[in-house]
Image (cartoon, rainbow, N blue to C red; front, side, top):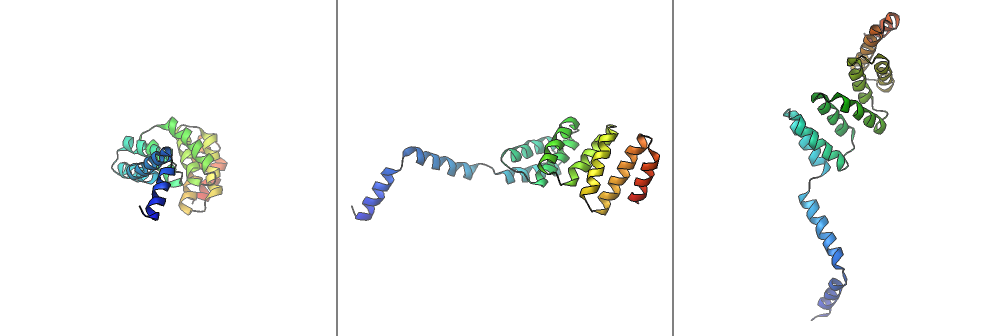
Length: 168
């Protein structure tokens, strides 16, 4: 046995078997397990094909594996809406807004959901926050218009009229 072979043998023997098993587990897990991004991509694909139940499972798995970008949350938002899981969607908005307090889209979408369910004060609050957070003309026009609709339902016609003027 050469000196190099002897050193390699002694190094190999000094590695605990548990460490070797852990290394094998992580190597095979990363080789065969799907990543959060792969689950997210599959969720997008399924949502495009209108398989919203399958897409929800995939996006949930992506989030479980650590996918936390706004696009992942936004996809789940859209999937829950398509599945008409409104209570779950409302609760999800709380999570999304806690995670992304400066992202206008979740306030805007929750405002629309609340408007649909005639929660006018809450929808006005969310549209007001949307207006503060965005500078996109189309979103601003829609937020002012939707806030005006909520105010009209409350019979607050003067403020509704002001919002409509701002919308257009």
